Length: 359
Length: 129
Image 1 (cartoon, helix red, strand yellow):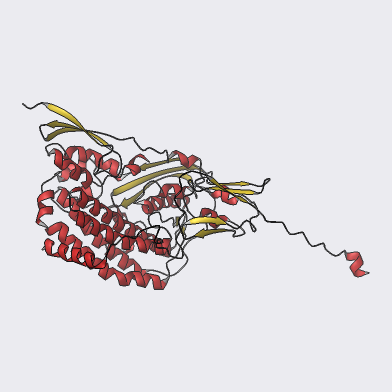
Image 2 (image 1 turned 135 degrees about the vertical axis):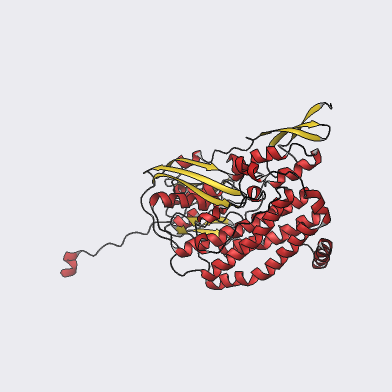
């Protein structure tokens, strides 16, 4: 029997954009056990809720994550609106949906680039990020920020998108969709990519569900669950079907994210077409008194914001369950049995976002 | 199939040149609503301190007695909250990002606003007389 050795993986590793530490127990080159540990970048953002007034905390909530920032802000304001029984205008709901889907597009394209980089396909990495840039340009033109949009507020949104800008966005969608199709073609049909990803880091349907996997990790194992089905924002009015893949390996998780690019493009298209006229915000007075669990589908999976207020301007408690935290137990299950050289690809396949996880 | 698609993209990129720009030699891409950095018009600021209270990052300090407005650019998150809160619209969100620096300093601005003297109401007795 070969001798067991422990190889530390991270917190600083070329494949990791953010610090997570894994102790890999190896027998020769094969991983037999994994012990994850986090806690390198805790910032105490949840505690800040007691120091900032609830309308201002949305700026802090957006900065929980540097990629899915808009959806953190949206989850927070939806929670506050639910506690305070605020009816958000229809136009604001649609605008939120458009920005949320743009965020999903840029997040998935970012991940696809990083994933291509992790498997050593540098050209594809550059191409994915080149496409991402066009989404960031749209976000900047409509919100004023490339990554941190800052447009959500309690009671609606801060900025409107004018009619001509909306039609401009819609006009660019077919070309963008074609570019995404070319990208998908490379990711899903290239022999070297298939060989690198197929059968790697497999997790079955029931196992993924039992371990509480979220987002593309769950849907990549064949579970058709997407929090957008709850119908928050404008999703209830739009035609939408979750993307899933039955294989449960790295290739399947990649395919799910690629499929979601087209779902997002379609949702933006529908939202632009159905965009109602009217005000973009309502005046909110008073302070939240009560508690609420708000669930929103982020690019990485379902995020849960728990908010509790006591009728003062400062909330008493905020708690965020991020999708990456939910995806760490499935990751620990995926790794045993794989080769050491495959670990970076499998770790990246769950799209780890550690700054979210630790807040 | 994948190879041909990628080869086309690579050749197109070779012809079109780089997708990146040599910032800061070439200015950043900006649109009219880009949130770059906040500037103050000291001649209009009434030292009300609303920007300081609304700032989620506590980057702004306003000293009413000394008539000084300070901003720590390292703390500022360019969220636009102060610009929205300002009652006299003396804060502006510029579209350019601040230049990189090697030392953290707090930017101080002396407020030059002078409260206009109230016009004396004409005394009613004299007016009537």
